[in-house]
Length: 266
Image (cartoon, rainbow, N blue to C red):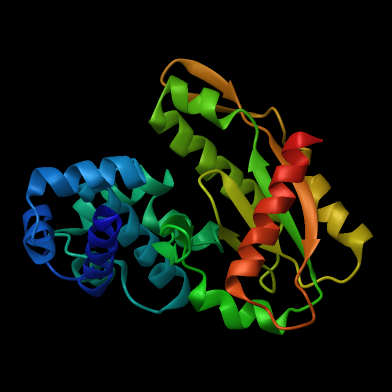
């Protein structure tokens, strides 16, 4: 179980120093473990290298700054430790499949790679579960109580990842783009699992909510292109509501995952 605590420490250190010039060895030293041990933990726990995790988090936060601040792209590049606008553009495009300037014009969603948390529960034995951090959006959820949430799950994601993890990343970007294109500024889109997304609509009318979902489902089977392969991408959709009573983060996550489980098994 100690390994999960080490991983939690590493993730916290990265978040606190995301705008600093950090590297994998510095993180291992902070956690008092060998670099090889920490790299193994990241591979097992997150299926990413330390470097990949840092880059994805930086590009997620940079995307947020692009959309929600007046900062120049060059200042955002330097803020996240890129030596030039060109190197920042290459890294951003690798994650978002779009240049920073194009992204600023066409997107509303920035939470492609949210912070990862490990929650611990004491009982007969200590259990650790990996969740995304929704703390920043929590007050927004509470203000939208009783509104419908559309949960989306990518169909045959494992098969796409088996082709290539790069193809899987492209599929995730494509689904985000489809949802983002039909959502309004008043709606909130977030990722709560590897291939699972939730759109908080702010609507209390199920029929209107279903119309939004149908616009996204109408894109099912439209392909992405990876190298010389044409890969169809489709999603399932299900519905739940933000409760009117007290909203607890853990309970909300359980409800989202239960909704996805229902649409997978139906």
